[in-house]
Amino acid sequence: MRVNEENPTRRLCFNLNGLMGGVIALVLLLTILGVLTAWDIQVQKANAENYYKLKDPQGIQFKSDDNYKHYELVK
Image (cartoon, rainbow, N blue to C red; front, side):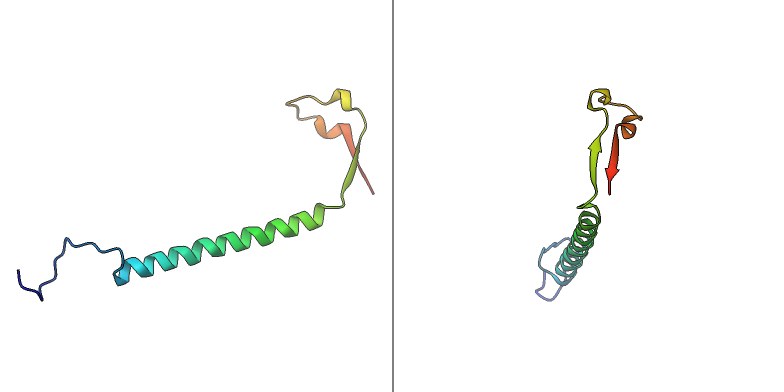
C-alpha cells in the first residue's frame, strides 16, 4: 500500500467528521439542558407561592382520581 492511498476501513475518532459530529451533539445536548433548566426555573417561580390546605387528610387514597377534592388553594 502506498502512503498517499486512503484506507476506506480506517476509522479515527479525531478526524474532521467525527470531531464535528461530537461538537454538534455536545452543543445540541447543552442546548436541550439549558432550555429544560430555564423552563424548570420558570415553573418553580410560578408555583412557589401556591399554598394549599388539606380538607380531609384521612380521605386521601394512594391511587385515586378524586384526591384533588381533598385540598384547596389558599390565596
